[in-house]
Image (cartoon, rainbow, N blue to C red; front, side, top):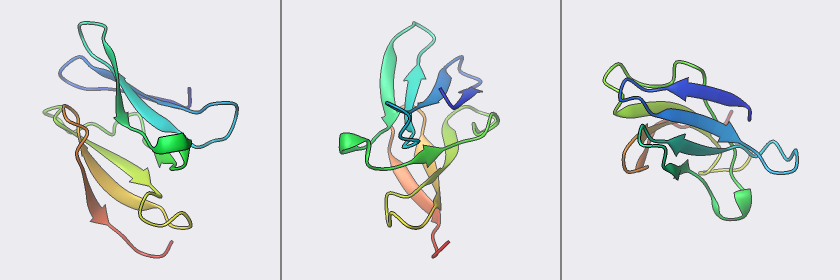
Length: 94
């Protein structure tokens, strides 16, 4: 476990890597204790990072960094906390 974030809806989001790869994937534990993938990639190929306060005040959106677009760049991505739909907010070589 790398980082945790509570949403105002009572969901707990965590960044987890497998085997020390540091390719963190986001999972959410819902208030009814179901665990669901939120921002993951096949083969854990993409790194997702977040801070403890990544959730919007209404709990509907999370702000993450992700290298899904280009493996050498970290973009700022907004993730729908219910559906996992992602929208790039800031992309650039960085």
